[in-house]
Length: 288
Image (tube, helix red, strand yellow):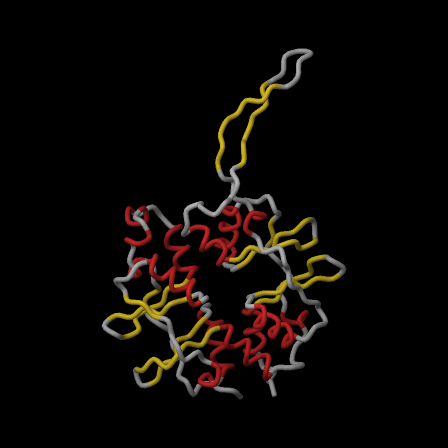
């Protein structure tokens, strides 16, 4: 069975507790990652992820949440304490620990030394290399897919993600998938002002027409109505129920995505995610 040290990422992006959300946002963008280890006195003390930031800022109405992002320190939003794994552990043990603790990464620590970090993406690589033929996509996919349509607002989609504890919502037209919105999309929308060329949409109300006259329209307000179609990824990469889950892992790795809608005859049948792959790895079936 492959070991954690074979698949972990050696270079760990870190920040200190007194640095700000704005600084971490720039780190996430620069390194194209989803999490940063938080250090205090040179030792790992916690972690901050995109989901942590969204969850902390959305919950409650504490005065500090109204500050600019370059004034909010990581100590406000990080998850304190770290669940770690030693480098000599096998990847199946890592998969089981991630599922048990409902987390997507594990700092790799031995003898009080931080050696690296193991993420679900790293486990995808291990699955692709050692689990060929173990599962078909239909055996691992999630059949109940959380969906929205192109006209749902991003606030509605964010609420769905929070409520269901998921990282993406598939946008559908009837049963046909036409796009996807991820937690990363919402992270960057929420942490920016709207200087991104989003067109303003005019809202009007119809005045009750007089007899034998044409309806009159009263202009009310102009403001940005940000809906799914404004930000969804429209180039959908999909898979089928009969495909090998190891091949699906390879596609996610090559395309840098965390899920694949599963379709048949242009209809959405399910979705396979990194978490589904990790669940397959944690089962009793063994890879080669």
